[in-house]
Amino acid sequence: MTLTVLQVSAELYPLVKTGGLADVAAALPEALAAQGADVRLLLPGLPAFRESLTGECALAPLALPWAEGRAVLLRGRLAGMGRTVVYLLDAPGLFERPGNPYADETGQAYADNHRRFALLGLAAARLAEGLDARWRPQVVHAHDWHAALSCAHVAASRTRGRTQARSVYTVHNLAYQGLFPASQFEDLGLPPEHYAVEGLEFYGQVSFMKAGLHFADALTTVSPTYAREIQTQAQGCGLDGLLRHRAGVLHGILNGVDYRVWSPAHDRAIARPYSAERPEGKSGCKAALQQECGLAESPEAPLFSVVSRLTEQKGLPLVLQTLPDLLAGGGQLVVLGSGDAALEAAFAQAATRYPRQIARRVGMDEGLAHRIYAGSDVMLVPSRFEPCGLTQLYGLSYGALPLVHRVGGLADTVVDCTLEDLDAGTATGFVFNDHDFVEFGRALRRAFVLWRRPEMWRGVCATAMRQQFSWEASARRYLEVYRQCIGSTA
Image (cartoon, rainbow, N blue to C red; front, top):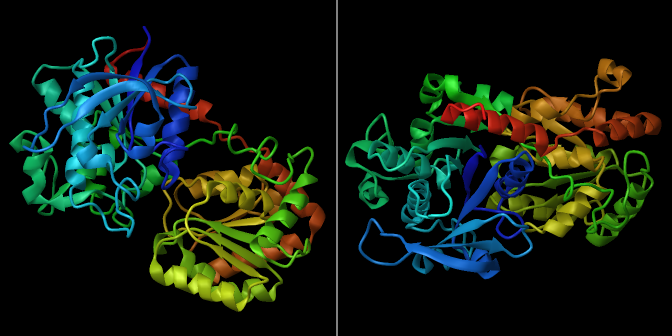
């Protein structure tokens, strides 16, 4: 029997993306389908999705838990996104807005986010109840806090005897929990008893994240190490007790890479193609990136890069602290991203002071991100914590050696350039343990030392580029989790 799975997400690459969630939401369904699952997507009716929907059919209106507004569930496909069927929650009063999926153009979170994403969860439950007479999911897989109420609504529907579907909840970042005042619980359309310690209540507030963690039949997160870390007080964000209680159904499944998108051998966004076997094109990509960013066109200068949200969590104060050492060693730096105003200003000031060595670009430019991976020698990912991280995986693919803090998925995917690993041919980057200026500086110096040994550097780059983190293995693990949930070995 074919397994039917509904994936619920607020983002989907390339139409709506604020981070790695969009990449996962796009790649995982295709990987599951390649292994025989019947996978469909449920997305909010954001303008980019609404404009790309083709062959649409209105399934049914959705009754809102509050008085005003309207919502209709549409079925169709997204232009350029293959044959995957998509359900779109068409609610113009909630989703036809500027900005990103969660905040306006000034970065201010929408005041009715609790309604917007509660309705997404309610729509998932209605599909699990059979709203589409032609298709019904056995498993509802919700991604991050925006979709977490899917698990609570499915559990409520099951209690009422309206569905037999099970739910899986994936934590992409435990630090972003979807917290709202308790007074807004009545807008969520859930049974009153769900506002409880064994439910959505979290220190007097409503927590969407906790709803997913409590009501889902299985929990996953995006790397094995992060699955262990979030059960500790240090990284549990106040939810470590609940996670330890549910440890028996918590699985760490590493994110994958869609190598059709992230491979320098056939990436049309970069200056020249190259590969581990034919690496010559990388030097051309570096020269093109230096020219594009106004840096000195010097092949001898190691080019370090940051492609990231500019937040303290990403460890970027460490980069700022070590800039004198990086520049003194003859290095260059490219920074792409936006976020914390103080970090933005600090990098902008550094770029103004050293325009031939430091370049700073604001926002998230997908094409430029590809060119940065292709042209860089080292990707800096010194995150304080990191559930999985995709930056280091893309860096490996493009031969931009990751320099990372040993946490979460960074620890699971990068092998430090120790003497033993260099000798064994397994080294792929630079790893530091303690999250402080001293340890980060030592890792930076190791990068410079290896750079001065070109033959060794080329060998590590070749090893890095041969690493495989495809979605195939991850999809197999997810299918195992789904089957455990529904008690099937099919």
